[in-house]
Image 1 (cartoon, rainbow, N blue to C red):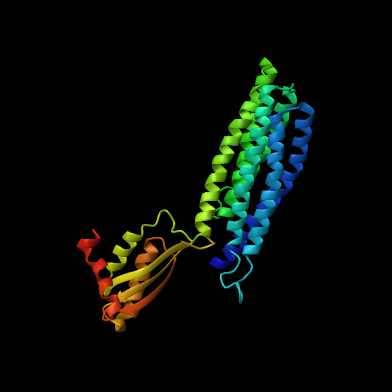
Image 2: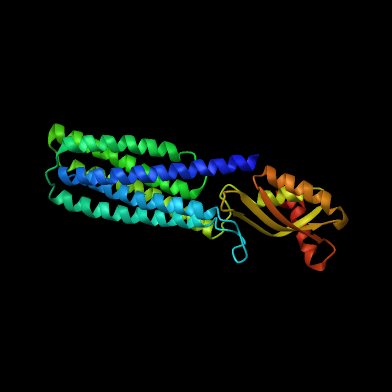
Length: 302
């Protein structure tokens, strides 16, 4: 039953990505036209960003479907990491986009062109409404691939807000530099989002331990289980679906009681937020495991 709900959730998720892709592509064309006619960098920057979002959403949708392919000989882990790779590509795309916006903004600050504020306000408002709808579709996703697409759309929304503000200021005061100034602000926010994506995806591809998991605390918890004399070769990482996994060698006092010890260890690890664990039992009588008993001296751990 849970598998059926999960399948339905993934179907709805891909449907939202598809709808977001189509809606973004249509409005990117409209915004390009509006930015060209009004001569607004804020609108043109947002239109370019929306065009990059078309690519970003397309990559996210493709990677999401690719990740659903089952594991097979040669790809025993399946294709789940495709979503992480897609998110990293989108993070790099955000930085390239920021570079273009900054380049254009500084060029326009030296010689601010005439901008038609009324058109900027109208097109910016339409873009804001569309981006809010798309953000609602993508909100709450727990995978990094969709969060990357979410950041692109959030940047669009901020670009629309900047375009509206710029249009109002220009329409009321005629002060043209507000257009590139606000574009720089949007670029700074996007650069921050792109940096976060690159850091998170790089850590995941490097199989880094999740930041909220404390290995020393986990060792202490495992050593508190009856029958455990020590542990070593502990590895913690995040699976493509977002679940946390652990593998470790467990030094036990009595191998004949391993079934009970294993059940207790898995319960402790599950409560600590580790959904998957692979534990290898080893006897504490082996010479190579004599030193592994030391971590389970609670006074030394504390």
